[in-house]
Length: 291
Ligand code: AR6
Image (cartoon, rainbow, N blue to C red; front, side, top):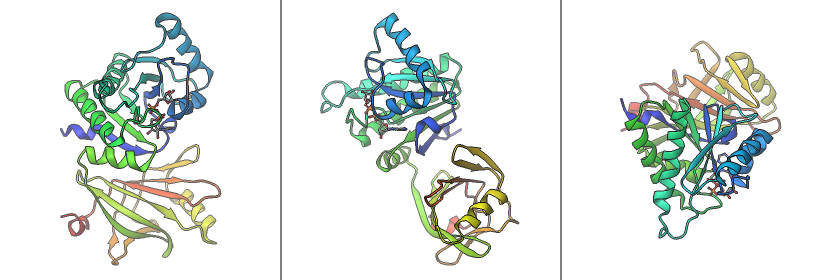
């Protein structure tokens, strides 16, 4: 088995991800802060801080590189694992070892608490200013080492908030991404432009936007009715894609993707264009683009 398949890289907000444990990039005080820490405490509610205070009473916070576990409060996860990344100091203060420790200790704690799935933010790459490219290497190496030596964790998801971190993480896993500019059709009308990407592990990704034309609502309804939906706040996850529906994707050179997707996600924001993401493209067409 290719161990890389245990790792997934997503772009987005970690508080929205459904996993057993969400990792927080906290600080030594464990009392909350800005960045992802603030987002997790806001979304999870008071119960997380209450648990943190119990830990503080017991051990006086959390050392850099260490990890502690609390309830996830109102979040979908079972637990939040708080770890404290190093502040970047030019690389002379053991930052690399401490950052790797964050990932390893968080994974160890997750495994001890029977978590099978865990999501990480890009620890230290925000307020603590660890260079994202270097941090991505440390993160991926540490996680690969752990999952190679333990079968306790099935899935590790890196949730990247910004494009830079997303690309650095992807390239750390040596996934090359090939993109094909394409158009999305519904009812034989163009409803959006997309870039279909293929990673060298055979997984496809697609991102783009539907065009908010006069037909926007019609298409939004069309998507809602045509595909099987599982609503999750404003994110609609569509897990089935059949050949006989009216939806198709055509590359700008005219080639049609016959069965382009096995999964489709639509980010449905009321007043903004819908963002579309397709996963699992499996088609001979790739022979043409993917050499
Ligand atoms: N989901 C996923 N990633 C996020 C989110 C989110 N909702 N929000 C931000 N990020 P940072 P650090 C990304 O600053 O550098 C806090 O005040 C962000 O883009 O949250 O480890 C703590 O209390 C960046 O890539 O954490 C500490 O005092 C990454 O998360 C201090 O910040 C980490 O950025 C820790 O600094």
